[in-house]
Length: 191
Image 1 (cartoon, rainbow, N blue to C red):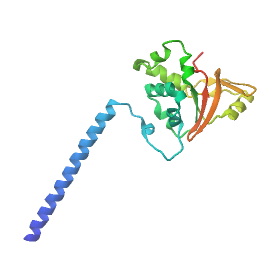
Image 2 (image 1 turned 30 degrees about the horizontal axis):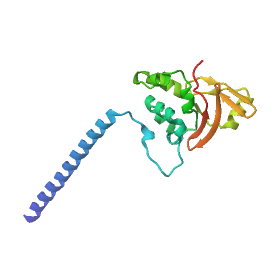
Image 3 (image 1 turned 30 degrees about the vertical axis):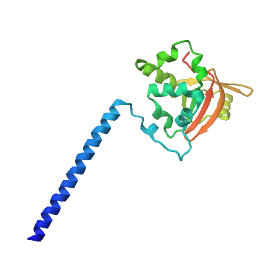
Image 4 (image 1 turned 120 degrees about the horizontal axis):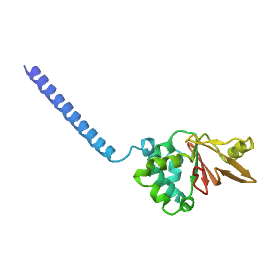
């Protein structure tokens, strides 16, 4: 009789624990969903990793010369693109390049209703593959254009040591864990 009573108490105790645990995880899932619905999903871009080499997004976030680019990437909600495995080449306009656009252009593009246009402009600065300065020079010597993520092709021009892509001068190249950042002196806009 004591064994049967003990089994019932034990079963009741275990059942209560399981129900309590399920109730909490369900509540936590609801709270997580509520938080996720108030901000856009960043996928891999939300992963924090202080051990691995920095990816394109992490390098850009850490650059004082690219705060406008980072703000634009966040406004367009395309952070996940810059953290993919790659390889990817990004032609990254500096803050000065954005400032050279006609007055009000950047502010207008950062408005939520212009998110699609902004994403298209930014995507025009990304190319599948890995193109450092030597790679760009090689493509130019073969008369090839660079295929961009928007489906456009941009001309690569070489004049001595100066390399231009879509008219923008490459002023620095940075290797990252998932590709290459070519810092450029202007925003590459459609013609």
